[in-house]
Length: 555
Image (cartoon, rainbow, N blue to C red; front, top):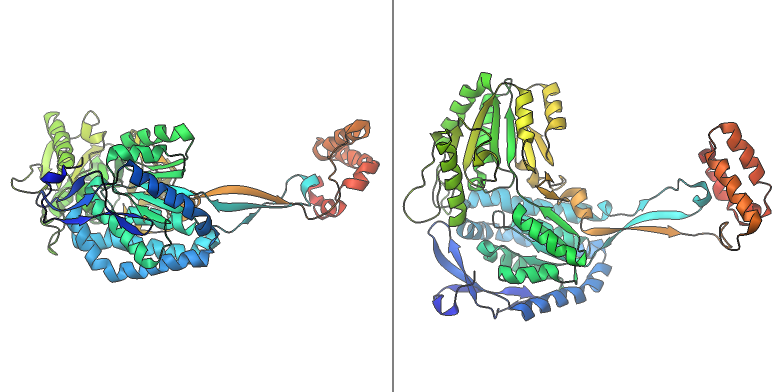
């Protein structure tokens, strides 16, 4: 919520939205930027009112025609300059992420700056190739003379609503993909990490993005709903919770605005009896606790075969005990605070519910006293699917481990979820790996690793079931930023065979043509094809050159 202007300390640094390449001071109050390590505000942003937000939408709408006409090379030059500026400013941006969002600065380089640099580089190098027209060969013989293509055309104004857990990498990769495809963009960063989002606006403004092509809007969540409703928005790309995603989709339906929804996960890991347990334990501990567990692809459930469950759990506990929790600005910290107090309360509720139902705290589980939103990396055993921690998205540094009799049980339980974003399998056996790849219900499945694929710009990102609709990243994500247009071109002259007038001769001709192309037996087709040659209209109007060139379709 916005804080009253009188309550904001005058000494706090103040940031503003980016509209038409200008910093615009909002008229709807201020919002504090709070350090999760201290629980205290260190800066504030001014919030746009409805009229100012509407001006931003209009600026993006006006800028679209000229930007969409630019070549890929011209658009790519802006992205390349943004890439180079990001590299120059990487340390400063990583420190800002640590301060506002809470992940350690080294981790910010790893999971925020690095994926953004890779995405920018990939899009500059390959977007034109990936969005090149696709030739469509005609199946219909009578249309074989026409030139047909699929053209990938920009949509218009893209509204990107982005989350607080990865405020830089998710925001920037969505912005970059939309821009290189020829769209203009409105970025609405999460309230808890608005400063990081505004930094993206400053980065692209310095990179030379034209006026109106990118707006970054600090608005109250109530006003954000009006952006979703705005008919000038051509598409919405939303990353966040399933509950909010459903609201976005319902609101977008008013104008039939298409959406991409990248929602939550309850991501499962299956550890087989033949797994390399050292690798599995180390990988899963990282996958569970990176970003303090606040990752939609975090390992939130482990199903380990009973035969190796004790050994695996012991290794997980040992790895977890080694993690250093503390102020994210320190280089000696592995896990920082959670971003928001309310999210820490959800974690505490899930752990308390599990313990009350019989789970055992193998390590962690007690929040420290003192300032900040810290919660220790926690592992639970003795869990089952009656517990909230095995069914609801926890989004915190908690790893529940469930021993199961077999891989069959593990796969069944892994798929027994409303979510399906990512899953991982841990095995040395190639046949088992193939089975896990095929049977685990998720948009991303990795073997002997987890979480990492968002750092690969060619890998599509998205889920099934309640984990969302559509994809970001890679070819599929880039094509979410365009409309697919079928384009047919007539290269010859004269009337086509089927143009008016009809008449009795045309009736007999089309009846014969149907049999010539679709009769069950080859001899019946040949007979009809010979009769077709007897029609004068066929000789006058059919494109015989195209038919001869594609004569293989007759058989």
